[in-house]
Image (spheres, rainbow, N blue to C red):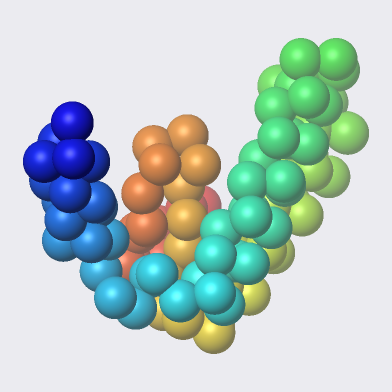
Length: 89
């Protein structure tokens, strides 16, 4: 069991680049995940192209822009990965 735990821990360290493991990136990741959740909720309640969904989409894009400006990367909570291209639009 200890060998499996060590192997998983080592794989995690290799899979997550050092720059993305920083607390500041984690804050950015959480902020984007919150905005994504609000957008998903708005779509569910009001529809894909509702005014509320469009407002939440604009909020999400603004958060991604903040992360991009700061770290030249943005988090995709649905894919569970960082993007290094400015391709969220």
